[in-house]
Image (cartoon, rainbow, N blue to C red):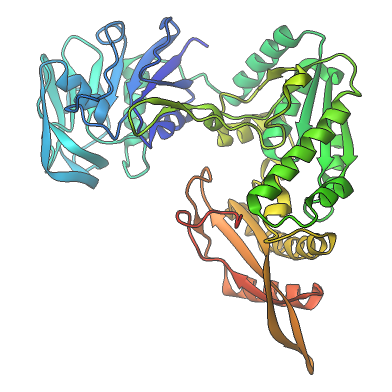
Length: 510
């Protein structure tokens, strides 16, 4: 890839957003910690410095060596990055009289510079800093101001070095994407050739070279990530890919059969393993959420290990790990911290399996995974699936798990999810599900008094699951769904709707 953008992460909560916005321009970008600069910078055609919770005035401030970047490559400093370029190159950064946070509007724009082309006075930007640039660095020219921030944007004369004290990556900056395009395309001269089709072509070729004619095992979950990873591998190595889809007894109603049928129509080599009795037996009597997760993970490993041994001479384990699971960030204390989450179905596989790991999606965000899947003509039903937790209904049944409780929740969940689809609401929701509560409540059905279960419905909107807002579903839909659940699911006499946002409430209840 000849148009890479290097994003140096100084610990900003928005760093991933920078990478996403750059990739929306069909330009490839990678995030690296500020203190782990790649030794070879030749692959990177432009560099972006992120924001940070730190102050450049602090003795503990992140302070990388940019001698091989500044003045030699197109460089954009965002917020902390802009202040860093000023503070260490002859400028002056001082505390703001008031914290500069939230929406602001450009009150001055230099009309002659390409950096702010087609961005005019009055354009809304998003500020988030307590320091401000009082004096620009040596050789700098002011490009933009707001009413409260004189040096909102600048460039260094004779270099392709720019700094801005606002965040172009957030949606609140209305012309943020245009500004990034001006910098990367008009100034740095990068080509916009990072497309799903190009990714598929390049990745398939790389997988063929890496794997050759060796065998690969993949644990399918039925979700988007593992399914797209399977299709890429299938394109690369065909029947040398062995997929295992385990029924842990905690899937949605009829999901095991329907997902296997979908995979069959995709031409994948998939073996379905119904281990539901084994999981439920191991979970008997366990009510602690973490205890349940550990049991489900342990039994999955045992089942997966049993099945993998049936594939002779397998050398590789494929995972559907995506980029946000792997990005190394910078901790609030100033030191680097690796934030790496394994795929929920294969995390923690024992060392004795001795398989090499291949992760075809390790550099993609979730939305990019879906676009790559669409470019391979994968079914929309799979690509549009809501996220579903690895432990499945095991963490949506509060308390201990029994086959009876699973059956009740499967029926409730099916009514809820099918209803969202019938009402045209499913694609407007990021994730939805039902929880079976350890609560029995009094009710009346006909002339009889009942004492039965309460279920909670949850639907949220989100982009990545890190934060989420509850969805304001129509009252008519909720009324119909509640009536259907109470009338059709024996053992349930009360339905509630969860209107908590994340934070503080997580999406799942356990």
